[in-house]
Length: 110
Length: 120
Image 1 (tube, one colour):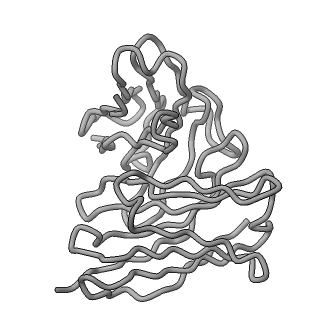
Image 2 (cartoon, rainbow over the protein chains, first blue to last red; image 1 turned 180 degrees about the vertical axis):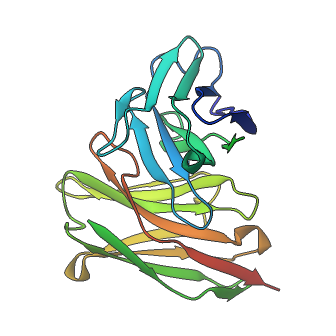
């Protein structure tokens, strides 16, 4: 199974914390590495988190990643209106020798 | 590292989509990177298409969904990467991005994207 499932949308108020989940098949997410990307309309995605929990260069520590059981999670604390964007997770699927993306989550900062 | 894309924005159905990605700041033959293409459909979903990398020789990985139609070619003399997608249909209408993968960091650099529309 190579599907990564994300909620289509999440929302929270400025200053609050939000989490975005990325779920795989029950036995397939435990020993793989998830990365997270942020995308604003009309621009290319930007790498935020790799290897589940490592922040990429110059990424704010308000962004963090974790993995537990069958899900990976992107957390954003101290929400700002500028965080309003789409967020995608991705993994390497060795059985396919290819990368698989989640469907993406639209974050709305109310 | 910077990636700059070029190619037509309109392709007729059944013809071949061709795009080029010029890489600056690193060689396409770098043994610490892979280079490839991702597309984004009008509905917003991202789809990885394929990649190439050099580790004493060239390697290629392609998505199953396009494997019979895709060719990715590294052009070492020009430090660029090309994409050819044959026999296109309306389903191939998308924004196409070239990208770089590091040893640990997937898609750490992206091109600006090229909107390609397949016309009937």
